[in-house]
Length: 280
Image: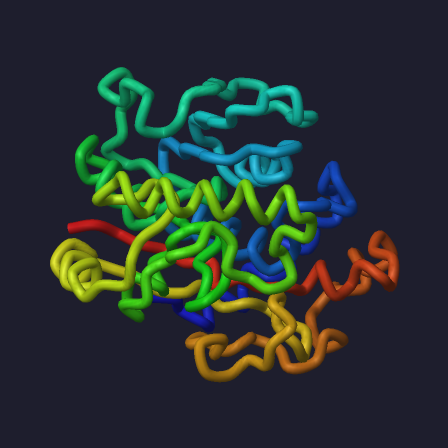
């Protein structure tokens, strides 16, 4: 679990590093809270190998490379989007499950999944290859997100539509039709969906059986309204409360605020229940 006293100890070091990030506005990528969550796990767990599934422009690659001296494997099917590349990184365009992991020493490794795939399936794939530890950067609450999450499995709600969040639904008639066909085909023809999953009680049983450790990494500070434009209550309750109630109380926070336009502040302090898991 998180040692909150230790958590506080790393904030100033993180902000010094974060102020040097290559993308001051990391559109469509992780921002302050999730970056710190990864920074903290890297510092305290000290893996010798980090697998990053979902690279985008390369913010998280930069974060890993500048936090810890470790081997990095970067996986992304769209390499043309990558701007920052790790000096000694190994790059794949295949999916995580399509790589021969026997060629790597995974005894002390950490998988970071920011790929919007089925988290439950990812855990099974990890166990098949022998991986133990992972961070799921997006751990969507019930009725949100575009992929089946650990939270949804624990809640026994499944993920029966590709995109559950109201603010990200298809808006055009063509888009709605394509999405409808995709979902009908997936639910009809596959018993275990790579994208969709019917509500069930079995997945929670399997998680309880296979997880040695699971916790949501607390944010440093969050906006009054969640990433999904909802109050932080019910399905959106933060189990590990934010470390600070007021942004101005965060030490050295002024060091990064000068880089962030006012209209981006709400995105910078978003939070989507980034979580750490360790398999038995």
